[in-house]
Structures are given as C-alpha cells and as structure tokens.
Amino acid sequence: MQIEVNNVTYTYNKKRFDEFEALKGISLKIDKGEFVALVGKTGSGKSTLIQTFNGLILPTSGYVKVDDFIVTGDKKLKRQLLKKESKEVQILNKKKAYLLRKKVGMVFQFPEYQLFADTILKDVMFGPLNFKVEENLAKEKSINALKSVGIDESYFERNPFELSGGEKRRVAIAGILASEPDILILDEPTAGLDPNGKKEIMNLIKDIHKEGKTIILVTHDMDVVMDYVDKIFVLNDGKLLEETTPNILFNKENILDYSLEIPTFYKFKNLLKKYGFCKDLSKINEFNELIDIICEDKND
Amino acid sequence: MTNIFGKYTQYNTIIHKCDPRIKILGLILIMVICFLPYGSNYMNQLAILAVLGVVIVSLMIIAKINFLDFFKSLKVMWFMVIFLLIINVFIPYGNNEHVMISFSNGYTLYWEGVLNTFMVVFRLILMIALTMILTSTTTPMDITYGFEWYLSPLKIFKFPTQVVAMTISLALRFIPTLLEQANRIMKAQKSRGVDYNRGFLSKKIKSITTLIVPLLVSCFSISDDLSLAMEARGYDPYGKRSRYRILKFSIYDLVSILFFIILLGAFIYLSVITNHYGVNIIETLFPLTEGVTF
Image (cartoon, rainbow over all chains, first blue to last red):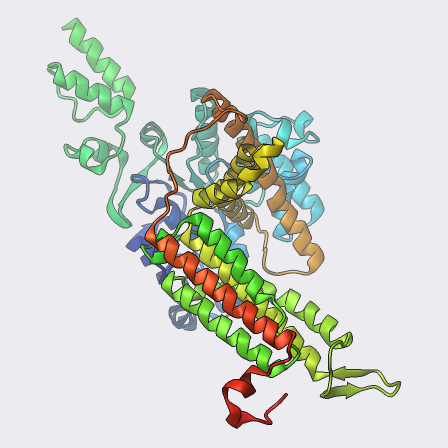
C-alpha cells in the first residue's frame, strides 16, 4: 500500500462562524504504480484530500500514510502511530518531513502561476535544489525533465513569461518532475487547454505513469478519465461514494445521480440506444469496437 | 484563508445596521479621543485609558467581533513595541522620578519610559480594535461609499471623487482575491520544497521572491482583464453613475451620533481639566485615596 488514507476528516476555519467540514471520514488505499482519478462535483473535497497527501493540509482527525510518512494534525495520534514504527521511520518523520514533498509531487490547477525565475532552466532547477540535490545533478535532472515534457534545448535560457500558455504549463510540470517524485498528483491538468494541448499533456502523464510512478488525477473531464484512468474514486460531500473502474461507473443506470459529466463515448452509446439501435452495447467500451459493431449492423 | 484582518462578518447588530458615514466619523472621533493628552499624572492617564478601553471592548462585544482574530492580528505589532520601548526608555522626557538604571556618567534610565511605552502601545491596540470594528461590520462597498461622500465637497475644485472611490473599492475588492492567489502560489511553491517558516533572513528573502514574482504577474493579468471587462460594460470614469444601494438616515444613526457627541464632549472635558487646569481626577472622585500617586 503506497498511500493509505484512514478515516480522515478536515475542517476549515475550525471554531469560527464560517466553519466548514470539507472531509467527513474518508478511507481509501492507492497502490504503487496505479493510475487513479478522484472525481466528484465542485466542493466535494477532492482538492482538500489531495493536499493531505503531501502534508499541505494536516487532517483534523485520522491519518494519511504515504510509504513511511505519517500525515496528521492530531498530535496524540501521531505519537501513538510513531511509537509502533522503527527508529529510522521516527527520525524520517520528525527531522526529514520535507522529503514527503519530494516523494509526492503536486501539480496544482493552472501551475503556470508558480513560475518565477528568469530562465526556464533555473525555474525547473529550483525544486531539486530545495531538496538538497547537488547543483550539477539538479541541472541534469532538470534537463531530463524538460526534455521529457517536450521543451527544446533552445528554450532553456529563455524567460518563462515569454512562453505560450501550454508551454508554461509544461515547464511547470517539468518543475515538479525534476524532483523525481514517486507519486504525481495533478489537479485539473487539462483545464483551459485546447484539444491538442490536452492530448499532449495527457500523453505526457501516461508516459510518466509507464515509468512506474503512481498518478493521482483530479478532474472534471470524464473523457480523460475514460481514456487514461484505471481506477476511480467518486467523492461526494466529503465522503467516499464509490471505488470503481471507468467502465463500471459509466455503464451504470443511475450515473446521473453522481452529477458527473458523461463521456462523449457513453453519450453516443446512449443516443444509439435511445433511437433503437438493436445490438447489445453493454459490453462495448471502446470506440473501435463500437465502430466495428455499427459496420456489422450496416452489412446485415 | 483564515484570519484576514478585519474581514467582513455578517451579523445583524446595531453597529452593522449603522450608516457607514457615521461609522467612519465615529472611528475618527474615537481615535482622536485615544490620542488626546490627559495631563501629566500617570494614574489619571491610566484610569482614563482604562475607561476608553472598556468603551471600545463593549463596542466590540456588541459588534460580535471574534476576540481570537483580534489577538491574532495584534501579533504583528511586536516589532513596533520593541522599537517604541527602546526609543522611550533611552530618550527620557517628561517628569521622571523612578530610576531604573543609572550609568556612571550620569545618564539615567527611568521606569516612566516603560510606562510611556505601555500607554502608546495601548492606544495603538485601541486603534486597531476600532478599525477592526469598522471593517468587520461594514462591507468594503459601504466603506467606499462613505469615503466618497466625505470627498464630495472636493467636487467644487473638479477633483474626480468618483475615480478615487472606484479605485479604493477595486483595491478593497481584490484584497481577498489576491490573498487567495498568494495562498495558492504558496502551496505550489511549498510542494516544490520551499519552507516559508524556517531558515535565516537571507533564505527567507529568497523564498519570498518565489511568492512575489508570480503574484505580481497574476496581479497584472487580473487588472488587465478587469480594465477590459469594465470598458466592455461601458465604464466611463467621469460619467455620472447611479447606484444600487442608497444610504439613508435611520434612528440608529441618530442614536450613534448622539453617542459620539457625548463621548467626544466628555473626553475633551477630561482632557481640558487634567491637562490645562491640572485637576487630579482620581483624587477628586475618590477623596479617600488621597496621597496615592505614582
């Protein structure tokens, strides 16, 4: 188990007039090398939940365990949990807690806003340097990261603010990748991009996944979920509603109750059904299969 | 986004209902009261400040201000307190009697310096409390309307009061937006390993640049968008604008005006008799305590 979320609750502005309970007891597990998506309507607690994974938000109660790191705001619970662990884990949790941020790379929504340095290479090197990687090695890692997101060498000395939106986003993602995280969390990576840019970013993420990294995706774009993701966690109102795969979820009769957008493919399938397409479509989950079956139908 | 100093909180108290113009006036009047001189007798000064403190705290209670927020907003003052303490203790003025440290070359430090610092700091705290009452009971919009109204005499000299008011209201409107943005950028940089809390000054300055540069960039892009959006909806800075909310005079306003006038009168009277005629109020009010002086 790489990430273990155990009965986590989180309350914003505790004991104030605008107190708001964002997470109401969530438990879930994510294995190493999985490609998962967190979906749910706005305000369902997705963003809050992912921020607990790298300790930006400390759970009010319950805990998140990422490999050996324990994240919780409940000091008593943390002490109890640490007692059971070995000495090395205790030291890791107490003195080297910043390494959690290295392990869990987080790409926020509109990551282009995090760029600040005067050259692209410097900006990407910023992450590894913070995690105390030597300068030469940091440079090497940054160059690799930039190349992997498809930024050409001629760009390295340019000012990041001169780039286009899509390029900026790729540089920002490279900034996270340069720290070589084991787990990559992306909050709405495709928001505000054109279809081509979307495809580029998602293929990039898929390549990163192939390297054996765990990917956690928060998104409203169900087409992306359908095409790339292995496992889905559906959140609603701070609770975990369901843990399924895309095929099972989108084939459900009551899918509209989840207030999720239906992927284009399933919309099309529903339309076919509605206008009396006679073949059984319940087992068809890909465009190619659907095209085949439609061709067959025509030939008949 | 917690504890923004003076964030508007929606309640339905008398102070919330009051006209913003009167609240602004009252704020200025009580601030003046805070900084009036009250003679040279320390006991008197402390007593008067205590009374003022009680008045302001009761106003805060009426306005349902979260005291926790208030104390948190005072945390930023400690640097100023130390600065004032050093100035006040090392540069003695007024009547000093109680020696703290006497150096061999005749330079002496007095306890009165500490007391002076305390009183200045207390006055500043009262001032912060007052502004907090204003900002947490009045929407930024209303505050701007109030200011615009006070600026309106300047229209005679062709001073563009509307433009100023619009500028102020936009600035106020975008404080929460920018804070949110700053929060977001900070989280993103924290994920890249920046620690904003620890490290020496040089390191801190370096980590602050990682926040300020992106914030400025997004600030400019926001203002660019905003100006276009305003122009698209036909904004003309010098045109006459009607408004949605019209300020009206109500019974609460009359009561609060009376309250401010009485308060101001009373404290000016106190100031005059203590400062000008040297009356010792405590001795006059409580003859039994005669002889207790500081």
